[in-house]
Each structure stands twice: as structure tokens, then as C-alpha cells.
Amino acid sequence: MPLALSIRAQVAMKSIVSLWALSFRYLWSRPLAAALNLLLLTLGLGSMTFMLLVSTQIDHAFERDLAGIDAVVGAKGSPMQLILSGVFHIDVPPGNVPLAEVQKLAQNPLVAQLIPLSMGDSFRAFRIVGTDARYVHHYQAQLAQGQLWEQPMQAVLGAQVAQSTGLAVGGSFIGTHGLGAGEHAHGDNPYTVTGVLAPCACVLDRLILTATESVWKVHETATALDPSDEEERQALEDDREITMALVRYRSPLAAVTFPRYVNSSTNMQAAAPAQEVSRLLLMVGVGTDVLRGFAWVLLATAGLSLFIALWSAVRERRFDLAMLRMLGAPAHRVAGLLLCEAWWLALMASVAGLLLGHVLAGLAGQMLQAQRSLAVTGWIWLSAEWWILAGALVVATLAASLPAWNVYRRVDVLSLLNNP
Image (cartoon, rainbow, N blue to C red; front, side, top):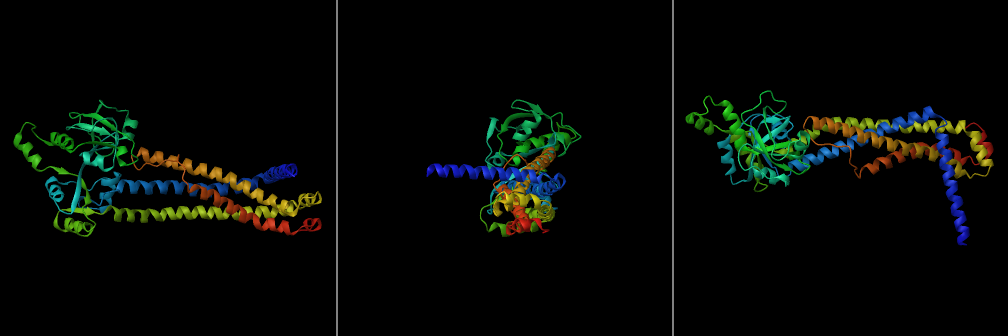
């Protein structure tokens, strides 16, 4: 009995292998139709993969960078601009605010933590941010080399900055005015690198961090008419400003009263990151939905095209199918040829579509990296991508089901030889 079962298993396995091999040959017996269906399925699956990779990584980046930040306080203007520039560092800040006013907010009983940020300079398009050690601790970043700054004109590099610029501990650089490719270099005030942060997959990876006093020193030296004039320097110190501050509330109730107090009682504004990011995602979501809808249209078109191709194949191959029936092939095996053709196409389109989506996501990530923007990569695998493969198989099965059933129910040779 075990020997008989083994023989039957071998026969069944050979039958399945021959069925798949024959269906593959049938598929490419009409190369133009197969290539068209493969192209349509690949484009649809590639678009869905691209959208899945990019949207998932951007959502994670927003959640990661916004964690623990309840409000951003800065100059009056666009709240969304304040969030994009202060949290994600992908926009220009609306202006500066007086240091004294921000220090008063730090004493507010509703505020548990206030992190100052001062911007205005960059190095090779990487932003130089004046702050304090709380900014590093907020994102739980760790040092890969060296130590944090201990005095003005010392700087700590994010992992992406160190990789792109080649700077290391002990090196020095000169900042340029502006947050992009600045024109004026502050040659009299070079920075010394004291540390390099380990990759944290957060906004710190693409920033150069230094003490707030470094930013003041660079710009006060450039602004003062006579650096040796103590009165003038004292006046500059009294008028010191920062760009914005990141605030964490002491209790959830502060979300109602604190922004109202700042917006109505000061010359500053308080923006809620969660609210502004929701608005941003709502606006961006329109384009995302359009692209996702386009991908579904491509998949539906591919399914319809595959259905027409398989339905036509039944007419063209009726003599081959009749011959298989005469040779003893059961009806389900003959119908399985059409299903296997569709599954071959789905598998090949899935591989090509997933590869296309990952390549496009990688190219998009390189473009964003060149702009010092959000980190996106195509070289990751998401568990949700298995659903794309399943979707391709479902579309192919639905497209082949009616032609396969049409062959299955015509169990005799005469029915197959007649025009369907």
C-alpha cells in the first residue's frame, strides 16, 4: 500500500508539472497578447506597490517625528509652515520670536518641556539648528562617535549628514547663510565637530546640531558694526531671538487653553502638529487617491483584457482541447490549463510589479534625499505587500473562471469541436 501511494503521488506530481509547463507554452503562443496583459498587470501592481511603500514610510516618519510634541510656538504666519519647518525641517520658518517671550512661556504651569530651536544657516544644504541637549534626548538619539557640544561653535552631525559630507569627529566646517545653498559663508566662525549621532530614523539624521549660542555668535558678529563695542553687543544680547520652540504639555487640558493664550496674548502663534498634519495629509490624500484609483483601473483593465484573451483562446484551441480529451485528460485538467495560464501571468506580473514599485520608491527616496527631505527607501519589504500578490491572483482567477468553466462543462469532444 505505501508503494502504491508513492507511485500515485509521483504520477500526480508529474501531471501537475506537465500541466504548468503546457500552460506556460500556451501562454506565450500568443506573445503580443501575453505581453500586453503582463504590461497592464505590472503597471497596476507597480503603482499600488509604490503608493504602499511611500505612504507607509511617510506616515511612519510623521508619527515618529511628531511623537511627544504637543505644540510649536513661533512667529505669526502659516501654522502649517511652522510645523513643516520646526518639526520636519522641510520648509522655511515664518520668522523669529523674542527670546524673552519664549522664556516666559517656559515658566507657564501648562508647559512640561520647551525646546528652543534657532535656524538660519546651513552646510551643503543640511540645516544647522541651534538648540540644547533636550532636543537630542527627546528623540532618544545615541552618539555613534564623540560627544555632545559643550560650548559654542561645536557641532554634532546627524548620521545622514556625516555620511553625505564625509565629516567626522575633529573636523571643521563653515556654515553659509540660508537654509538651502546659501550665498554668504560665515568664514570667521568655523564649527568643530565633536560628535556624530547614530542613525535614529528620525529628523535628527539630516540635521547639524549646535548650541543656540553658536547661532547668536555667528549672526551677532556679522551684524555688529564694531565687535569691540560692549554697549552695542549688550543691545544685541537684549534683542536676541530664536526661531521657534517645541512644547510638550503638562496635561491634556493644556491643548485647549495654551494655544488660545499664546495666539491672543502674545505676538507669537502656537500651532498644533496633529491638526496641521491631518490637514496636510487630507490635501495630499487627494493625489494619493487619484493614483490609487488609476492603479485599480489598470488592474480592472488587465483583468478584462485577460478574460477576452482566454475566451478567445478557447475558440482557437478547441482542436487542441479536443485532442487532450481524446487522449484521456479529464475535464478539470483541461479547464486547469486556462487557470494555470492566468496564474502564470499573475505570478510574473506580481514579481515585475513589486520590483517596479520598489525601484520607483527608491528613485523617489533619492530625490527626497537630494532635497534633504523625508527619508524614503524602496529597499524594504512590508507585510502588506503579500496582499498585492494575493490581489493579482484573485484578478487572474476571476478573469479565467468563466472561460475555464466553459471548457469544463463541455466534457465531450464534439462539444469542444463545435464553435463556442
